Image (cartoon, rainbow, N blue to C red; front, side, top):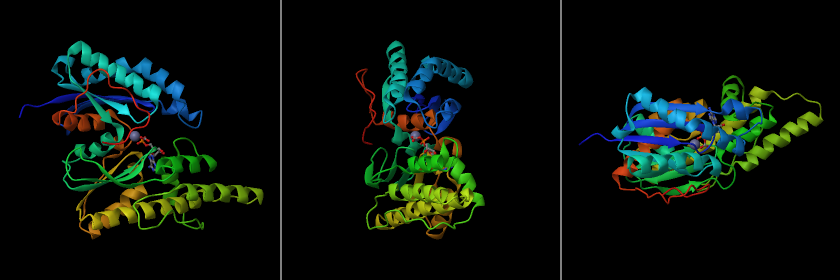
Length: 334
Ligand code: KG4
Ligand code: ZN
């Protein structure tokens, strides 16, 4: 089969990223320009600032990736782009850039769902084997997805309130840690001990998750201790919080694998970078003879390489759109 090169664009949040991926698994070049430092001053992403930065950077990042790959746009087979979900202003910049390239150079336009991208980040590690269960854990999602083949997503459960990354970020903020809070809590959790009594998040027969109760419990605990003039042991609180989160995520994931009789597990999204989650899943999968894939840390958080990997399969399945395709702040994975 002739090799296919996808130029992929991802601007759904605060990273301006462009990548060139060959045949859905081989990374030719990727550039990720993070705005994290800009937004850190505000304690979270400011949508208006994010889209303004994407406008300034997008053409430079496209040029840079082509230079890095030593390729011209004529050598590209299709343009893949994140159309949603995400910040609408940010998405629009990437989508407009992709439409413009598609129109000028007569290249097929392949819209990619952001979560499909996170899932296909695993294909950059090794070819995904089906059927599989995907545990999607990011700032906006906590989902368990069953896939029997490429681009066939069946959601078997998900969060009823806060996404797991969102809970990490909100708890970290109250603990006085900087944004994004997930990596901060993860680092502290390595040195702390599980000494705080915190509730177990929704532990029922479903594959749904609920982290708002745990989040509120941490926030209340901090406020109560402060009112009593007590000092919080931040590493111990980080460990206690992280253990509750990891225990429920891994418990429901392992049950899903058993019930669906699936031997392949992949993990996706920013929280897949969590060291505690990676360690516990590795141990459990070894014990249960499950074939586990987790993207390397740089492919866990937002990047265009994952959009290029997903975009290749979408392209192969003829999921090509015309220039009418719109950005969507909220959209189901399909
Ligand atoms: O996938 P992502 O980059 O953006 C979304 O699509 O949401 O995920 C970002 C989320 C943030 O909430 C961040 O705090 C969390 O991933 N995160 C982590 C870690 N690294 C990033 N959460 C826990 N532990 C980490 N090591
Ligand atoms: Zn993401």
